[in-house]
Image (cartoon, rainbow, N blue to C red; front, side):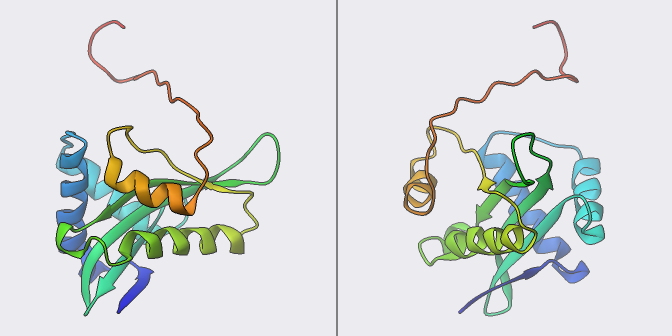
Length: 150
């Protein structure tokens, strides 16, 4: 049985392992400070939020999200990160985490929950296509702390 709950200090080692695996999937490397800052934010639970999926008491999935203002209506919820341990995939963990974020947002009268994934993430996209609408938007970004000119 999968349970979804806020992360606790005891979850830190397992969360770190899952978050590192998530970043590895996207070929990103972050300094230890990134993990510490994120963890402190999740424990404060005011600007950024995290939930964990547990199976038999073991953390097998994580999600990070935040609520922000929206110029054309009520606040919206951005689901920033979602990761399920490989051995727990296909058992409803990601679906349960998305549902819990939607419940969180609904309780706060948010207009919507939205997220992004890489176009090559076919496995996750099958789930996302089943639980949400792909509105066809393309993401652009300007890295403000990147080395070198654009």
